[in-house]
Picture 1 (tube, rainbow over the protein chains, first blue to last red):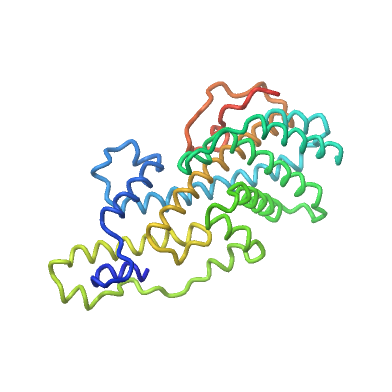
Picture 2 (picture 1 turned 180 degrees about the horizontal axis):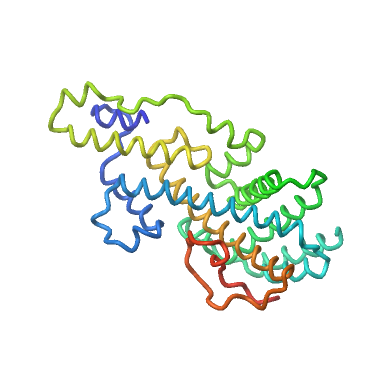
Length: 92
Length: 213
């Protein structure tokens, strides 16, 4: 993160302003399910980043679980052509 | 099977032209019905390929891993090259996550001398180091984003989160449908949830299914 260090050293290379960081962090905060409910002002940037990491890990875990379930279902389900048509019509 | 896929292609193309909405801003992508349908169709195709292509012995881990990868790849394709994480997924399939998890020692406090030097900015420095560390963790979670600058990393992370939420929704819906067809349970579960994230059991993460064509 050279851009971070150069900001604290007051150098001329790409400086990221505090407002920019806060703006991005607040945008990210709107995506997180937990911090959205709480009062926006009191959540620090570090907390938002932490929540983001946790949330992504949770989503990864959900996708893994779903992959396992789908793997089981795909093995046991004998997908005939009519069933495939049903699925397709439900999705689209 | 080939006749089916060609008709499904035609159906998809027809649907795409009918449901073609004007350009939405980047913020609301991943949450539109159109995106959902596009991803679901790609997911189905990918899963069908996994099924037909599996001559492997029926061991669980490779199967679910193959499905996870297929789902991720379909997700990355749906991004249509807009984001770094999607390009990273598509370009590094063979390497996969195993190599990304090799840990190189990362110095946690690079600015020790600066902390001593300037007391007024001390608190700010500490805050920025903490943020730096967390941003690095975040960069490892989002594919292909380990060395990005802070604003770009946050952009990628927010896009990635939205995409992941859609992925979870689509896979949950597909799981529900398949379990209904296979197990013969009665009907679609009553309460239809619009929530983007459901960290409880997967069976409750179903979204509203579009009406049959």
